[in-house]
Image (cartoon, rainbow over all chains, first blue to last red; front, side, top):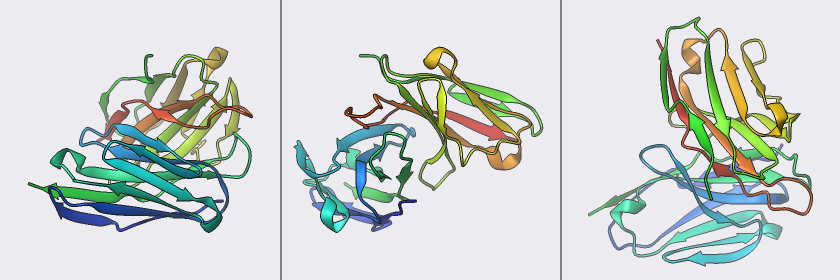
Length: 111
Length: 116
């Protein structure tokens, strides 16, 4: 099955800094999502981005499907951005393809 | 639009007891997923339903875990008997599913299970 790797595992930044989180996947994908898991454990959808570039406020994401990676950009970080960011991907061309989560990037924003 | 609903939110049981979790997906979503998330790890898929049929249950410990999705809407996940290592958050998600539709998954708030 598809392998999903995230880097870095941990990231500590000062408020206002920018960050880039990376997700590498081992096969072609029909689903690539970025989530933010808040301190209460809720997985919040950030982007559904099997290919291309999307932006939502201070967050943006790019997936280069041919090179099998996706990047999540966070600009002007705020303390509320702290938490764990997960990338999840499903390979193949069927809705039955199993989605695999990476191990996450734990982001800590210091005031 | 209402999101994915799960209950209970928290459950504490003794080992060897049984427990059941309930999930109501987003209206119109054909595909429903149950995940197990152990502390410090990413969610792991346990079972995937397309309407009321099982698509993937390869990582479901079938000797103690069972799941059903009657009428292709609500779903229940049961553990019987529970072990200490089953302590985790159990997440339910749903997506539109099916060819030509979005595969984007939406998650419920989860059920935090503690087995003592």
